[in-house]
Image (spheres, rainbow, N blue to C red):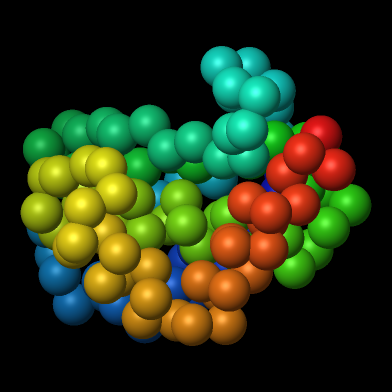
Length: 122
């Protein structure tokens, strides 16, 4: 079990979405290379629970296990996808996503570092 990663997601969820009863905290499924392109470090899939509430399931590339700061940045990026899906039922990298991602500039910066480092850590 990846307790650290799930605890980070739960913390961000509690800070930003806890009062929205239509949202469910995202779930961290773990690390996998499955369905990851050459430059992909994380992926969020979009789901509904039995009450029709939206939530995201997040996976990260195994190369991030060795790079905590980069992992946090990519996890934040994927959390923002789950956040947007939970609140607005939208996906992608549009202006609403970017606003959410930039709401924590430290983690946004870590995500940028991960994108730059991707060719070297994979």
